[in-house]
Image (cartoon, rainbow over all chains, first blue to last red; front, side):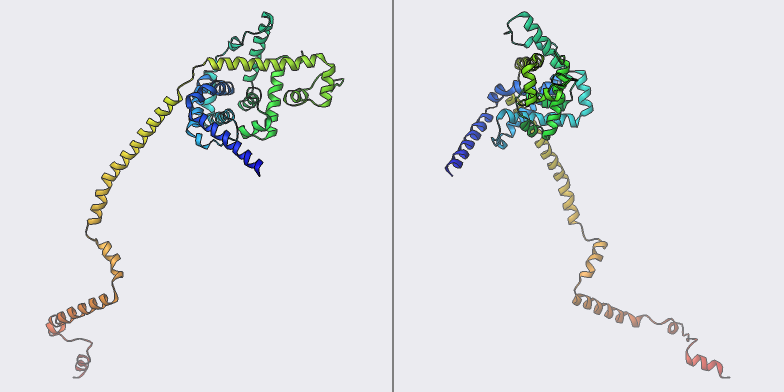
Length: 193
Length: 166
C-alpha cells in the first residue's frame, strides 16, 4: 500500500515537473527544437516543410500541454506529435508532398561538414564524412515509414515497443521496416568489408 | 552461422545484431570472423556519425519564437471569431425584422382553413343556428319561379289529371 502510494506520488511529481517544463515554451523550444527538427527533416527530406511541421509540433504541444499525462518523457511526447503531423501531411497531400519534396529536397550535401572534428587523423575524418554521406544517400532511398522507424531507433534510441507505440504500427511492421532500412544501408556501405 | 554458401552474417543476422543481443550462432561466428566484427562496428559508427552531423546541422538552424507564433495564431483565431460574430449579427439584424413582420401579418385564408377544424362544438352549433335563421329570414322573400310567373308544374297531379279529361 505504502509502495503503491509512493509510486503514485513519484509519478505525480514527474508529471507536475513535466507540465511546468511545458509551460515555459521558450525553454521547451531551446531544449527540444534541434532534436525534433532533425527527426522531421530527415524523415521527410524537405527542410522547409520540416520547419513548418516542427513549428506546428511545438504549437500543438504548447496548446495541448494540459493533456500531457507524464507517462513518457517530454521528448518522446514531442516526437510522437511530430510523427503524427508527418503522417497527416503524407496522407493529406501525398501528391503535392512528393512533388514539393522532389523540388526542394533537403540541401545538406555538406552534411558531413557538420561532423565534429574530433577524429584522430585526416584519413579517418575523410572516411567518416564519406560514410555519413553514404548513410544519408541510403536513407533517401527508403520510404517515409522506413525512414521514420530507422531514425526513431538510431537517432532517438527508442526500443521496438516504443517505436510501435509512437508510430501506431504493430511490432512486426516496425521490425520489417528496420530490417529493410538496415539491409539497405548495409548494402550502401559496401556489404561485407 | 557459418555455411558453405554464405560464410558471413546474413541480413537477418546482421539486423538481429544491430537491434538486440545476437543469437548464439551469430555470437559464435563473430568470435571467429574479423570481417563481420569490423562491418558491424563500421555500420554502428557510420550511423552514429550521421546522427551527430544531423544533430549539429539541426542545432545550427534558427528556431522560431513559438510564443510569438502562438500570439499571432490567437489573434488570427480572434479575428475569425469576430468575423463569425459579425456575420451572425448581420443575419440577425436582417432576419429578425422579417420574422416579426411575418408574425404580425393577419391570418390568410389558408390559416383560416387550418384554424376551422379547431372550433368548438358549441361554436359550430351557434354558427349552424345563425345560418338557419338567415335562411329562414330569406326564404319567404324568395318566391318560387312557378309562383312568380304563375306557372304550374307539368308533373303535378292536378295538371296531369286535367289534360286527360275532355
